[in-house]
Amino acid sequence: MADLTSNFIGIKSPNPFWLASAPPTDKEYNVRRAFDAGWGGVVWKTLGEAGPPVVNVNGPRYGAIWGADRRLLGLNNIELITDRPLEVNLREMKAVKRDYPDRALIASIMVPCEEAAWKAILPLVEETGADGIELNCGCPHGMSERGMGAAVGQNPDLIEMITRWCKQTTRMPVIVKLTPNITDVRLPAAAAKRGGADAVSLINTVNSITSVDLDLYAPEPTIDGKGSHGGLCGPAVKPMALNMVAEIARNAETADLPISGIGGVTTWKDAAEFMALGAGNVQVCTAAMTYGFKVVQEMISGLSQYLDDKGMALDDLVGRAVPNVSDWQHLNLNYVTKAVIDQEACISCGRCYAACEDTSHQAIDMSEDRVFSVKDDECVACNLCVNVCPVENCITMKRVEPGEIDLRTGKVVPAAPADWTSHPNNPMAVRAAE
Ligand SMILES: Cc1cc2nc3c(=O)[nH]c(=O)nc-3n(C[C@H](O)[C@H](O)[C@H](O)COP(=O)(O)O)c2cc1C
Image (tube, rainbow, N blue to C red; front, side):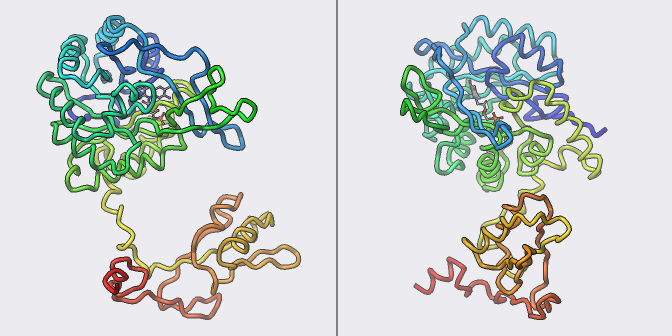
């Protein structure tokens, strides 16, 4: 099996799968069980003191969205940072690190935006033997209203300042955890780098209201008739997280800044995608909260198998897809595909027809006996039929060469103009014309 040993900013772990800072890492009991199940590292649930007391709600603290099969797609929470005393957490971290020296143990920290508060907590954390710290600049609820978490993460100057304080005070590597609740994630990432961060991790949870109780007229989870926005995580946020990781990885200013990828990682494949887009390792929360700690076994065996099949080392995967993340104007307009329906696999449900006929390009024909076929002349290769079809691989896109005669229609496939700069779809060309 491929060697999954990971060295992330000098922090070694037997595999690149860490548990993210959250309930799974809130106490010694959990973390010991997580390490026994095979996790390579943990980021301990965020520590803080110095600020106002942390008291969680006593009503429900989670909301959710599900797929039709009741699979959990997104989890929303209104939980705060750890509500356990600092000294208890520190004692437990020290004991766990002593007994699992080969695993990574990172302390997540969030204290008020004052130099003295950060400088006071760092020596205490260092004393536990922790391998590094993660600055929680991302929590979107409860703490942000107190000027911490996302309130810091949305202000690049504060990120830079806090990171610098930490780097001046501790020998431990500093990871800055970023919030996705911001327009351009490259700005906080660049600020972290200017402050001396060893890495960034992302994403923290996405501001959200998952549902509204239509009898109480209040967001869920509802606490005594009221609700507040919470933070969304799980598979639903993975696409946003992948994009933000890629944005940082391909930005010249931050291209060399190591990234710990977080957001909806549930399988080895999710992890591999984050790594291909530039993440040196991944962190996981919702998948462990949904399926238990042993979910990591699938990640370990799946990633090893994939690397073996590819004949690739773990490090070779990191960033491998970054050069292929491009801006729209650089996409090849001469790349032409057409939808093809596999008549053997088709169950004649007609979803492709309804979607295409009603909302798109009228490129699917329905015969009287419900046989569906693609009208190549009309098909613009939008892929909607592929996405709405309930049968996997029933509709696929076939590539046809520009200028080539399409044998099914007898027509020449049109090519985009060789000079893209003058093409009307090119926003830069339109601007030049104006
Ligand atoms: C209940 C809950 C509590 C969380 N608490 C923290 C926290 O204390 N500190 C932190 O940095 N992130 C916290 N997170 C965010 C996670 O660490 C992670 O960034 C987020 O859940 C996205 O990963 P996932 O999609 O794998 O869950 C929490 C998430 C959940 C669901």
